[in-house]
Image: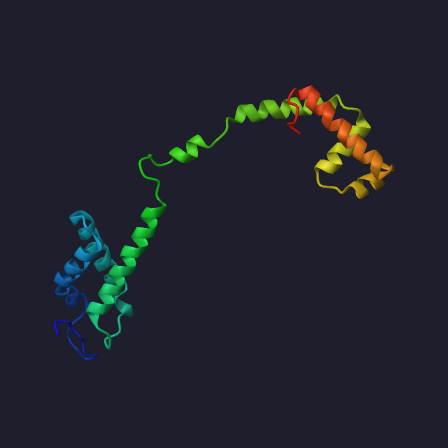
Length: 171
């Protein structure tokens, strides 16, 4: 066979043996990629990974099989990475378009604060407690009133806010 199997006491180093396998790596890369440029990149990355991991190579295994496994795994990793890439857009385009203008949120926050200030204190407190996630039962205990009163205060406060802000259904 054309495969080199290194005996444990051989004077050949893994580095020198990898060079002898370059023609076989080129043939295998040709099966995986169509582009000559991609093929050369794949071979180069395979050799780099093999040299970096040469200390992990066991002399009782076949070098060609080890290199082919590295090449196949490198190809699969690169293929998965390319599938995740957005084609046709420059880098960062998606991030730039998905960001809302910060001044718009500042205006909305300011409108909400002033509208909350115009709501009666009892209704404002009840609404804020419920909005923070406090249950109706606990809110009723904190406000010293019945659950039905809490629900009606929250409802009235929401309607007041909607009227103040001018966006019905926004809350």
